[in-house]
Image 1 (cartoon, helix red, strand yellow):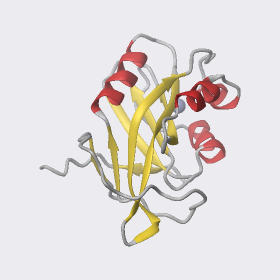
Image 2 (cartoon, helix red, strand yellow; image 1 turned 60 degrees about the vertical axis):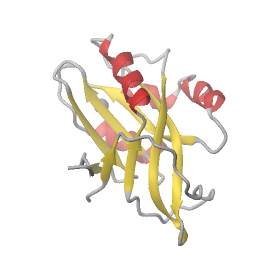
Image 3 (cartoon, protein in one colour; image 1 turned 135 degrees about the vertical axis):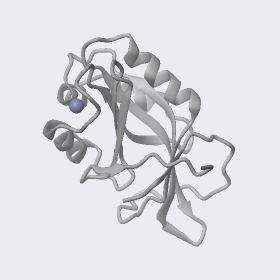
Image 4 (cartoon, helix red, strand yellow; image 1 turned 120 degrees about the vertical axis):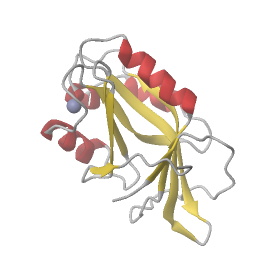
Length: 170
Ligand SMILES: [Zn+2]
């Protein structure tokens, strides 16, 4: 799967994906630079695993509102009470309440992020199960970061398909 991935955050004039659309192909993922900076700053301060949820928007194609044209990540919500594993983060954390409270009009929970300090940026079997259990929309993003090695990787949808970071300006 090749997905255009960009951190440009200029205003978009596209239809918001209707609720309930589950047969969708994502064409592009974007993250706002301040959202990426916020997530990296959160994870940089921990030598144990930490994480949170990603908030943002899912846009539909103009000519086909059941296809996802673009996912835009607008903000990360840190899980304050995470006990250290991705699974517990996804299972029983007040981060879900915090994320709901932080949603702006048109936003939804578009995925999750967590760190693997010193272990490398990959999705473990547990991470894949978490993605399938809690982030199973076709537009659900999983972002894993190793803040010590400076690596990161992105995955999409219930099958945790890798997202390649492609700079469209190059
Ligand atoms: Zn993990």
